[in-house]
Image (cartoon, rainbow, N blue to C red; front, side):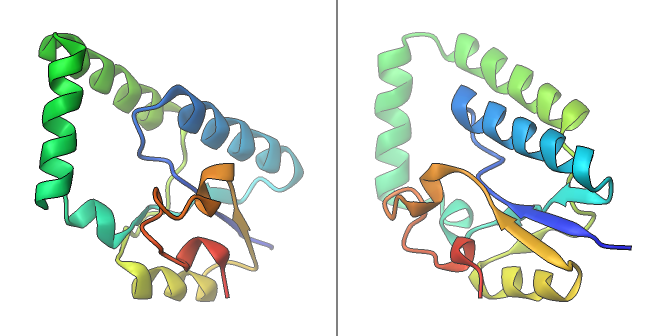
Length: 130
C-alpha cells in the first residue's frame, strides 16, 4: 500500500494556512486514504526565544489590543487542527530530521505557496524535498 506524506505549514494560526492544510489533506485522502501531514517542526520554530521573534510577538500583541482574544483564537485553531488534521505519529524536529521522512512515505507532497517564501521558511530547504 502506498503511503503519502504532506509537508506544509500546518502549525500556523492563520486562516489561509489552516484551510490549505485541511483542503490538501482532504483532497489527497480521496485519492489515497493512507495520507497524513508530516508533523515537521523547523529549526525556526524551535528558536522562538530569539530577540527578533520576541519583538515581533510583542508588537503583534500590542496591535491586537486583546491578549485574551488572541489566546481564544489560538485555542480554536488548535482545536480544529486536532480534530481535522491527521499528523504523523513521529514529530520531526529540525531540518535534517525531516529528510528521514523519505523512508516512511512512497510519495511526498509539499503544500502551500508559502514554502517558497524564504522569509517564512527561514531559508529551510526541507520543504523543497530531495
